[in-house]
Length: 136
Image (tube, rainbow, N blue to C red; front, top):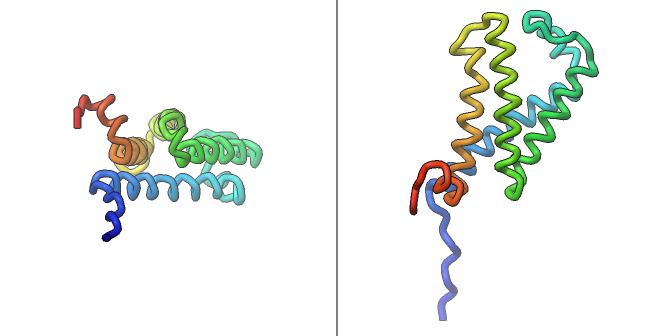
């Protein structure tokens, strides 16, 4: 008797996990930076017009960490992606308001949001079917 081969993951699911992992690592480092070293964040806050208060950056870090954790957990990944989209939209609005460079600064939240949703859609075929009409 031979053992049955382990279930093979499709390339799309693997690519989705890689994309999601990249987004999670980046967002976790950003949240950690806001929680651990808010003074470094405050040094860059005047150009964005954000309050130069340690508590403000720690609150942003907590919000980002919570959204990222929700995205990381499979059962709440869609909720996490929706909340991260809102968070990143706020970042885009801040950069747009002060006239930062469009491609490098302002649209970075859009790029990251695309990675978040792209990873989620690739690793969850049922979700892809809902959004894309993919009947596979």
